[in-house]
Length: 296
Image 1 (cartoon, helix red, strand yellow):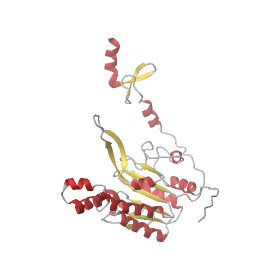
Image 2 (cartoon, one colour):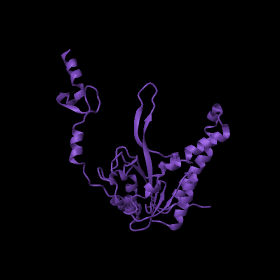
Image 3 (cartoon, helix red, strand yellow):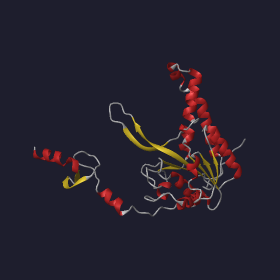
Image 4 (cartoon, helix red, strand yellow):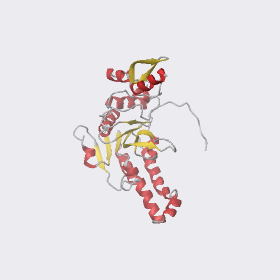
């Protein structure tokens, strides 16, 4: 078999976007708005795992859908994705992808079931079998991912999110912020937007997993909308990436001005007016301690 290398141009680039947030952050609305822009008038298909709650915006958006119920095995996701492939939608929305990870019958449940099968209640044996018990669940996850990658349309993946911490030996836990509840599937997105609690669809771009050129395409301080979907559709077909022109609000600018590094504690909390040293401000909480240091 011979191979021929040719000049490469970007066209019909696959788009898989992640949107993650806790309850009432606006992820379902955001996913549907983004899909509407991406579809450009074409059909939107939705794989819904959220029951009746997942259909709450059916009167605002036009789409076709299927309800995926427990058990939420990755293999059942793969089957639903293959069925979606047959109807050739302009965009596929999966709301939510988190059930494949921690929902009833998802990866974590499947792993526990494998441990039960291999070791029963022998906890030393269960510990020895931990990695082996991941073989079947992870193989199923791979099948789901490759079904997703085989689609010829953009995909919007909505995920639930939770705050995560990192345990550090001998130190306080490190807050890692809001992160998607998901496994390896998050590696397949071109970017994943994080919606904080009650954000009404406005992503926290500092917490989001971004890369060029999307870090300049997604506007700050604005909800995810159809315009972003249209911009992504143009980019995926080989067009230039537009740069978002929105500016931070005045309120945001004022808030930023009130926070700075403190020369006394090097933290980042609200500063005290009028206290400076070597051009640096000092926090309100540090004023008394700084006075004592000065007077010694």
